[in-house]
Length: 191
Image (cartoon, rainbow, N blue to C red; front, side, top):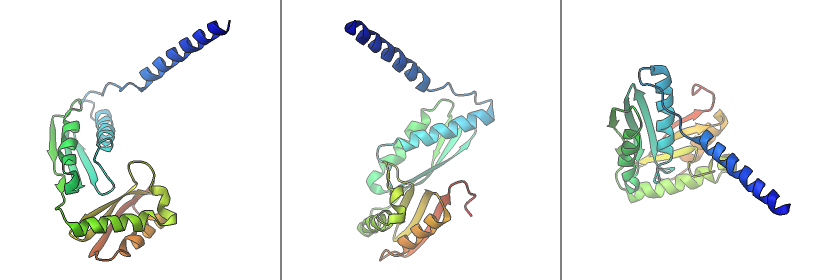
């Protein structure tokens, strides 16, 4: 009886995992002729594929625009992760229905001073108790872009107070020429 119960349990688990795998299978994309649905699907897929890039880090910023079957890649990547530029283009090209990719991702120039600023900014922002919760997972919510001593913060935060605190912390780092705070507040139009 015990052996029969184990066999049934294994069979039920196998069936349920098979059903779960089917539920997670990627959906067929809508036709590019159905522009509203296709644009929404493509936007979600491009975002997903970019987030999965292996060298995409807190010091890189990837953005994009969808214009029908064309995807425009934007943002900045460090020279250490320069392959992220071509990797992003390659994964987007493979998406169903994409006919053209305009890769405008900027590779930041190598700079030991910028590398020092990146690490100092990371410590200043992510070690502050009110902002520690953004330091979770592989993709951080606040990205720190440093170009020739100029810092730009991009990403999404929960509230205006966190946006302001990240700005204050970023401005505390020595040897920074300027800080541009492009952080977006969740469920807000950036106000």
